[in-house]
Image (tube, rainbow, N blue to C red; front, side, top):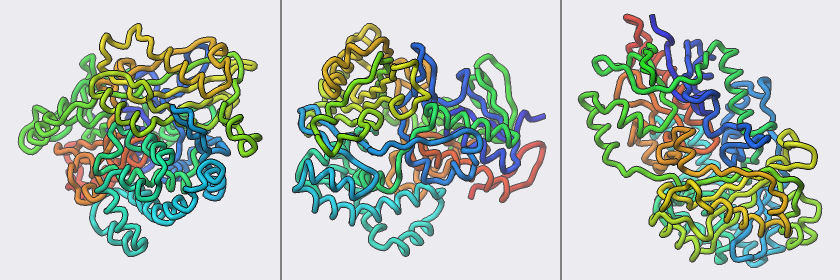
Length: 532
């Protein structure tokens, strides 16, 4: 007798979203998670007497998908807090910072204070980029199946569709340079786009990252009260209420296959769990190379293709700290009246390098060296969310640092780099910020690998352009179906992409449900289905 109709491997937010949709559709669903709790890198964990988010997570895109409403997550404890300021943008060269607001008018007022010559350029940028951003969000919310969806979107959005395809072939730096002649507006957009993806901003195919400012005007970021893990806690509650089950502390070693069909999974200690469908919400490369590599036919050919692709090293690290008091943001003083009554510690401050520093950063990363001027994302989660304050008068600090390669010469153990990052942080708060640090810890790429099964500390991301997705290239990640009957893929490495988004989880569940309905012939406890 099967242990479930569908086994979902991985209890991160995409796996839990997929499992919840399946359970609500009446599918007997079991989530198998290797860690002792669900959440993956969306988790909020306890350490140093405080609560820290594993990643520096502002949730935005998931709030555009309808997932929160469809799964009734507010009823299960998910409540978002919003900062008045979207981002504080600062620089390593001590240029004056500027404020980005979700409201277009307030951002234009901020730019008028700091970059008056860029006001007309920003208006022109918004006129061109907002239709592209709306269309990109619409496409990401829709399971990628046929070109019909693009033709419908083109009919409604007109020039937005043509520009989307044009920008998707170009580089983000090139697109942005067509509007702004001051790098202080270009590099922040690259920091939250290609730099986060681990690629240079002048790489062709990154052009849609140029919609970053426009997207943030369309989608207001929020943070779950109690930490990022409140999202996955609410998902687990919703899943179990729908009849789904979760089994933590159970690491999957490999698939159980028979004649090219899935029969279930085998856990690390040898236990077998039977199911006619497995949805892997984990690194797609591990699935394609390690799990189906011994299959025959097309599966073997696809596995060999994946095996030949370069292995990407992680390049992000994070410092979490407990502060004995509340520092003052330097930006508050440097911006004067426009920032006088604003909280500039709660929202994320993005510290961007200059173009020359950014180019050097990519060279140093390839050489395995940590950047002298890394891209940094800084905030104090407890400033916005009092539930995260460790104690009276205390605060928590989140300091995410990019260009921190996995293969650091000499290794990360004992490295003094995290202490240097704290000194860099001290420059964006009033003097004496370091004196407030009572305890801290570093999440380096090797630790992400060890604790979260991220191979070489890397979080995969779906990077194919929209046209490739619509045409179904790399079908296992764009259509969520692996070349083994009964195996589906979800997670950050599948369409439409990484971050706290969740569309990949919902789309993968839709593929399973569609196959179940279209091929719903039960035989010997298995589904006999055809791909849509």
